Length: 382
Image (cartoon, rainbow, N blue to C red; front, side):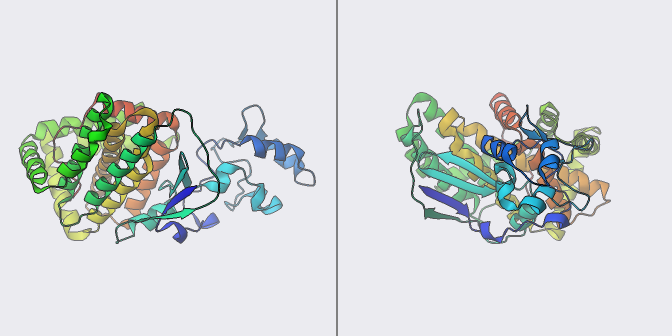
């Protein structure tokens, strides 16, 4: 079995009670069957508290009115961990913030940026992310798994990440090239012409492809109304998702009020001012943008082997970073022209918690990407 991890994987260490936003509150924690059976057999002084803290019919931990896990005490520490040790934790609690994507004979393990400490590590990393491989004994077979499609998705992801990490190119150009690759791959997947994807990879690494994408970007920059309408629609899509935390809508409404309720001229002015400010005072955003794009792309793209949605997954990756950027602009306006590293960390992990920790939301995001294709517009990732 082949395992892959990002090169910053071992930098992570849970900050426990020092975390500014505990992972033990705000969402429902599902308990795996093996842990449920073990909890049912637990004896000793902690048995009564353990049994009262579990919803046995739903297979979840009970929560207080403010959605804190029944075992999360006032010091933001886990009573179960304290009483029974780390091995008592269910699979969800034991693995988080590790995220696992499973393929035939491959396990890809990433760290979710929904964890503030992980977001802090990734956003503070200056070097391009690399992925490390190691082998362990064991093999599994998956029904209806297409190994040839998977191999082409892996090849495509490798080319797209290579382009995203080419810092000699403008970030908008990199995004345009990656979208082009994913679009052309999708066409071939639907036609059953996967074998011709290699031609796509080769074409988009040539200078002629860069010139074409740059031309389309220059054309799109003139259409302010289109950019404004698209940005507003993409942002309003977030209201269609399952709400995991009540205060998330308040943050969405604040951003919408600042950016979209005063018309496209004001929207364009705000973005021009912010682009100038961030270029001068937070030039590291270009690197942070790259790291986030690579994170989303690496985590989700190869999942297209199961549903065929290669282009939708790349669009979701791009739009996720775009929406994070929009929220940064609104936060900058709210802070009267100020923004710092912790603002970026907070917006990233809050977005991730709402979107990535709901299978329903990920599914809906991809379907919306299929319905609302990204036009050629100035992505404002600067």
